[in-house]
Length: 97
Image (cartoon, rainbow, N blue to C red):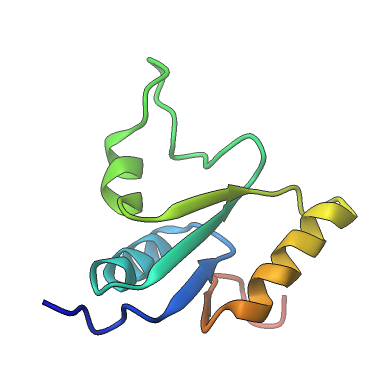
């Protein structure tokens, strides 16, 4: 079966619950989802025991993660280059921020 969003490339700039679920749906429909993470990783990734959390595994299945430090020019450059090829950008910032 051909997935309807197979040719769609999207990226995530922030990983709040609504963004996680939205991009999970995009991925299940075939989109190539690239998640921008802080260099230290997603806050939901690691549990106290040091393993990937159930929340992280459930919401990020099929997504690619790209660690990037957005406080450095190299990190910003990586994200801008990624944005040039993306069809969709999913974010969860407050309006005007």
